Length: 634
Ligand SMILES: Nc1nc2c(ncn2[C@@H]2O[C@H](COP(=O)(O)OP(=O)(O)OP(=O)(O)O)[C@@H](O)[C@H]2O)c(=O)[nH]1
Ligand SMILES: [Mg+2]
Image 1 (cartoon, rainbow, N blue to C red):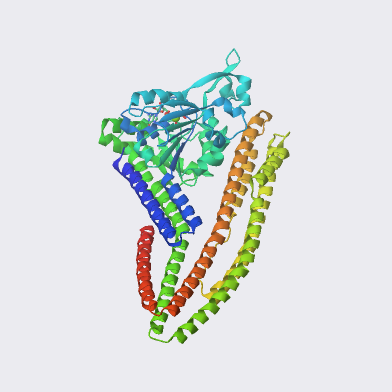
Image 2 (tube, rainbow, N blue to C red):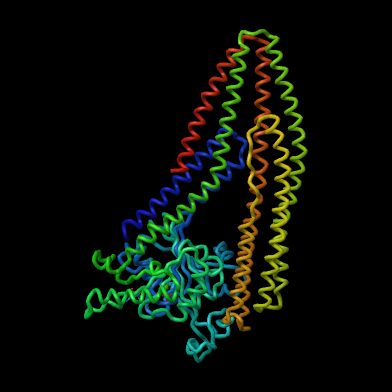
């Protein structure tokens, strides 16, 4: 493996951990200072956890035998000194295979039986049900044993043709597949539907997840790959081979699964070694590779710079043998460079952006808070300095003024209590729009809209229904949140105007991302229904599965919207409550100290010393905050 790829992945992991540590430091700082601002600390803790667990997902997508598995072996697992994942002529990888490292569980290969396709549950749901999977322990220290176990990924089994048709695994009308039918009425189908390999390899431990996929048939039959897994990958490597060029099914995969969906994708023209002709000069060979690369770029409508030319097989050999010249010739380095210097930095920037978005407003508020606290203490100190050596009467006057201020503040706070109660009730009402019951009812009515009509027409109706109902609820929730925010703003404005509390900016509840997600699902359905391959009646299982995939995605979007709303409710109210309480404590303690001074004039100097110490420790906290903030901009 190239040094810079491993290095970059490890650096990325380090930086993620450092950023997570900075967030934890900040959460502790907030905790120490406010103590009661629990919601924010918890939210920051969540952000830190998700940063620590973040995965960089790279998916390999292509028709069978283009060399996906070979390239994965060459890019990531050549340090085994052999082919780790099985790659061979013809269809080899029979099911989508996810490789990752999860330190919480023992290294293993988990296989989901193909028969689960008969059921309505989505893949995402099945992933949460270990009982459905066959688990095989693997020993990472023993490459041979791992290699043997991983052969399971290529397993097939005989199945009656009628069942295979029902599961969308075989199409008897396709002349290319018809010959597979045996005299006993069975055909071979993949034994497994999905595989997960938990393997403590350094690259995977540093947060890389690799997704290997089988060719077109399997991709098309598993809608969740198209709807969710591939679009969510951070990079999609789409592969072609020089010996086949761009065939019709290559193009179909490109159009259906890659070009429209993936955020970041490149095309890889593999097997360039097949053009290495010893009777031709190097420049002639280079020219013919270049011609094919340009042709590929033209057909895929990609810039030439997005088409990489490699020989996965020679790269693997070169790495195993330590043959530097062959490695350069294989072209693998440009792909490693791409991963190290484009894919990883893009993900890193996205994470940094997200974290900054989350943290920067909070930091601003913390800074304003610190400034306000220091100012209050300094004001008190100045006042006491002025009172020192003066008569009781003057101190009594000061106390009386402060008492007035406190009474007026209490009145504002009392009024706010009523507003708060109303807001809480409105918040509860808001959450009913997004509750589990609402979700269940919508999903049920979506199924009813389609039940009995598992056709593309019924499907379109079902998903439209789902999306409309969900959108309606999201809209009502947002509207409710907006009116709450207006009421809150008005109520808090009094604290700011009359009592000098720092301005606070509560963000709007924004559910736009989830509405967009629902709109995208409706679009996906449109594409799916337009596809002639899905129009046949036999495909009703396909439609069921597609609907299950859609419903799962819609459910996810709705649940995320709920979490967002729950979180919003807390960040809207809690910090304001904290500040209102803090100001009350402050007034109480100032009054208390004046009272004590009146009772015993000797305590005035003690109080001054106390405030000086307080200011000193506030300055320390402020310096620490500056130091923490520095870690976010690094
Ligand atoms: N000559 C040559 N053969 C290659 C190259 N890369 C892969 N192959 C061969 O092509 C065949 C298919 O490779 P795989 O890695 O299994 O292809 P795949 O895309 O994973 O195919 P499926 O798993 O069936 O979807 C194997 O026999 C490989 O040895 C290459 O760069 N040059
Ligand atoms: Mg393969």
